[in-house]
Image 1 (cartoon, rainbow, N blue to C red):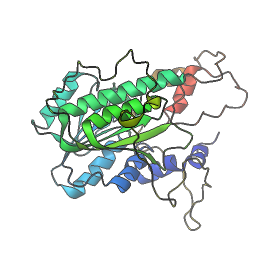
Image 2 (tube, helix red, strand yellow):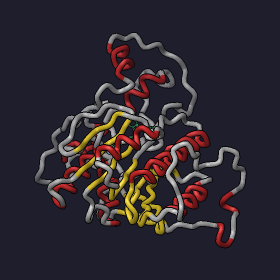
Image 3 (cartoon, helix red, strand yellow):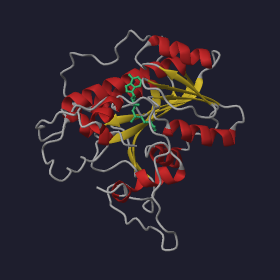
Image 4 (tube, rainbow, N blue to C red):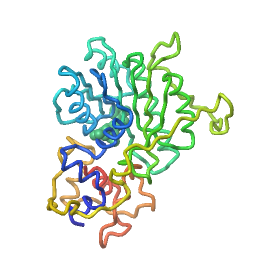
Length: 328
Ligand SMILES: C[S@@+](CC[C@H](N)C(=O)[O-])C[C@H]1O[C@@H](n2cnc3c(N)ncnc32)[C@H](O)[C@@H]1O
């Protein structure tokens, strides 16, 4: 497989490199902003689950046009290469200490905007993945209640799984407006979407508390069957006009008749990624080979299944798949 084949298959991956974004996800935030005007009046912003940092790049570039002194705090479990105007915290968004650290960086001032593109490592078991993603979203919401100003905005990745209505209900408790949005750069084949929650207005007397699980672990109600005022239906909006590139299409390498295609290397490879060890083993031909199940256990919801290389059909190891998956 040539190194330009991913450029052909994934137009946003290619554009991200050409425009200097660290990941194709940058376009998702740009398209959401285009629809919702997220950055107007934003001086303090938090990027939860930020690595490798393309959303922080968008915040840094956009907010600098609005305020000369803007404050951006980026949090991730993984280390991230530095970015201008962005303070990094290597930490877990489920921990109260992380919330405290964010507040410390803002010198006690609340944030205007919190964004979260968090995703756990996907197992391939859809119910489990949806559940873990929901928990990560609720952890992001919980930390947001500690740091967001009244009237502020929260944007987060959501998987539109079967219990998504429960999540909408929980978000509606804290925000007067909740919209589910699908940017054009997010593939139709993926259940990924984004909730845009505006006008933070927690219930009277609500005290943020990280030890409060927001999701009841023993719930077994079918929330989609609820009726009347108990049934929360949020508007769904496709973002990015029809002239935007279609993320599910393959485009020719020569997009522009008078601009010759040239391969561009990734903008900023991740620092110390968890798959580094696997890369080293593969380079030295030390990866063991085994049959994998038909559904790859490490397949991301957001990425197409990597094509199978010649002569290695059904013989790839989990690690080798992970190497391709994280190839930003
Ligand atoms: C899809 S990536 C984010 C991409 C990023 N928005 C960008 O544009 O470059 C998801 C990130 O979520 C992070 N993550 C997952 N669980 C987390 C947690 N509990 N605390 C902090 N970060 C977490 C992962 O380390 C990973 O870097």
